[in-house]
Image (cartoon, rainbow, N blue to C red; front, side, top):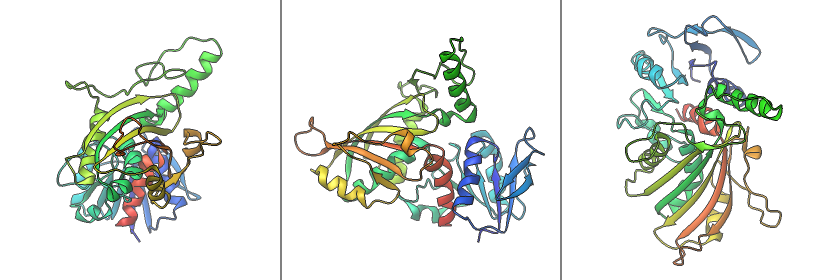
Length: 332
């Protein structure tokens, strides 16, 4: 029993998913408080058949709180998560604020659950595209260590927030009706288009999303030797991220071995039907807990048998955010 639970950012897209996951998984608590910015404070919020009033997030909001789930952006987390921890709460933070802090564990329960126990009041939830990748990649790495990962992502609008999902829907409707479209939330038109991930590009040419995938994977795997390169792309899909992954292992591994490992891996469902040409799709992974994995095949460009290709799809709002955070809370 977690006693007093607080949800910060309860009115956002991930915050709303937090509530669905808490209810579906029957997460135990005695009392729950919903916190948000002054803009959302005072709003009614329905949860598990009751109506709650959203309270304004303040530095003293965490007195008596045992566990705080944060999903309100990096600047809010930086300001208020330490306040919550100082008040005695354990924070599970969904922003990028603490992910690379060496004192803060970065956790995916299927990968490194033991790291959660090393917390000093704050545990970080990884980036959505990283979570969805490491769930199927980690069980393979445990059996046959990985030398190199090359990943290309197909990331849903939901990763940019609820308003981006609305924008995708509105733009699609407007374009089909022959109306002009002006992007408001995303930098380019998202309907019937795709573009390089809308995060800042660094001097090395990698955007922030790509750099997160590299650094976060190494941190959770406790292995700085893995070579990782990523290309992250925003696509016109509402809420599930997909990824094409090319893996080079340190030793040869067969397609059959990979399928056998993944068939029993937690949080993974193999969807690999060559006969029907049926493989992971965002429409199938949306609103699902498992990461779907398919297109599993030997990489013909690596004749030494060390290369495997696969395609995966996972729900950005669920496993990529809310579900992973609640699973961390369950570990505690």
